[in-house]
Amino acid sequence: MDEQTPRSYSGEEHYYSPKDKIKPSTSRSSGRRLLPIFIGITTILLVAVIVLGAVIVHLLTTPPQTSSRAQGSATSTTIVPTPSATPGSTATPGSTATSQTISKNLTIPCVDCGGSGPITLELNKIVISVSQNKTLFYFTITNIGSSDIQEYFSQIQLQNPEDASMTTGDGQGDGGAGWNLGPGNNIIHITTFPFIPKQGVKYTLLIKTDYYTYQNETLTF
Image 1: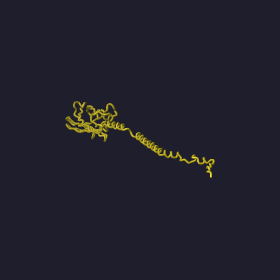
Image 2: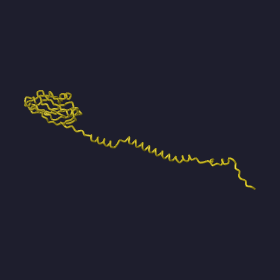
Image 3: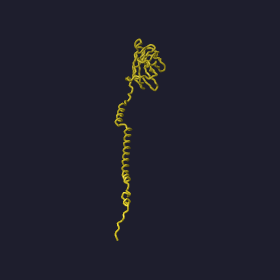
């Protein structure tokens, strides 16, 4: 029996062609490999943006240390303690004198008394009371004559020659302005001015009694 050659049919090659075999998708596998890399790069960029933003905010809200030190140094050098008022010291005109007691022991000579005059006048001290808005002058008045004397201050005034607004009215004595003095006797007379003198202002003390005129004295507080 003769061998028979297998019969080939038209189109059989096409049917079993390798082209028609199902191949795995290369695009899906490549996407899976790139996804972790993409996530990693995105995370790094996000962290970098957050860190950079924090640094910028810190720089904008925090003043430079050098400026802070300079300011502290300037403040410390400009702090100057307020000096205490000193009798007779020169101060800025216009500022109010502080409460204080000023010792004077100043003998005020009589310049129109027909000689030495029967009355001597000594300014012992000046007391400035800011809380009471008063300035008190303490005088010792002595009768050095040989007879009784009845006298009073017809003028006792603080005058500012450069500014009339700083001139006071006549001061008021304690228990009235007049006094009676026997020979060799003396009294302490307190004259009250209802104001506080200004520092650095030169006042002229004017004193007259009913019969006598005393030397003008310059006082600076």
